[in-house]
Figure: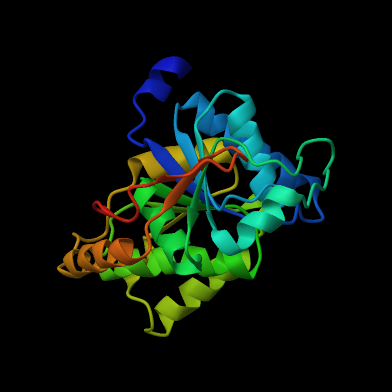
Length: 247
């Protein structure tokens, strides 16, 4: 039955945002590994920020070791630091080597756009400023109708309770429409969260803004083509960049 359910997943790849640190609780590390394993069980590939340490390293390693597809997207300015080594070892799980396919882009803005283009849904594990910024951006894109992909919080031990309280307060005070509150899906474990994302129904249809977004992405691609690398090898080929629909 589990195999049958996995085969019916409507997601080809899920983008996971998470910290470059492992956090102070083992529950965060366990959640990252569980998420990676659940993605593989459902035959869903991973798209992430290309890091090899912290929760980013744990989730990517879990997917890779279980035979799943991994695509890391990282700016050239961060490539050298990752490749040479920040070879930190966390609980025997993560080395300094990237796993799967690595796609290098010109800057952080292109990184986020490329990750979104490659993915069918978004999940945020616990993280810091960067995780929060990436999460809020894709939520805003959904609010604007730029995409209709589901966005989920893996709310490990209530890590995101304060954020959810903030959103509820913003709704109460009239800064967020009640219908847009439904953009955010949350659960305390990977299996429940992915099931909720599978069942997610967009709160609104994509708007004309999506068309403008696609035009901008094509223009951006013509100026800064994406480079594709496999693992930690230096071989490069021109990638597809930011062409294609975001939704």
